[in-house]
Amino acid sequence: MLRHEFRPGKLVAGLFLATTGVVFAGDASGLWETPWFAVVPLVVGGLCLAGATATLDRAIRGRDRTERG
Image (tube, rainbow, N blue to C red; front, side, top):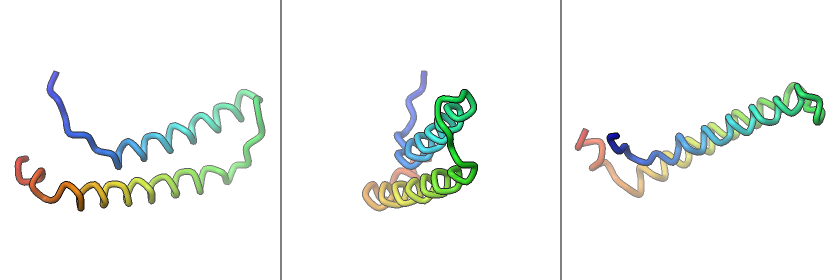
């Protein structure tokens, strides 16, 4: 299996989207009540945090990894 680069922005986005799925799965199964509009701050906040994380990662690591291809 080929190794790939660690992308923390994608990790953060995936965690927030998985959390959103768990929250609404719990609502669908009747474990708790979740308002329908709760998806907006979870997804938008998660994507904004993922973008900030990816920007910070790029600033720390620099542009050299994109040149390697």
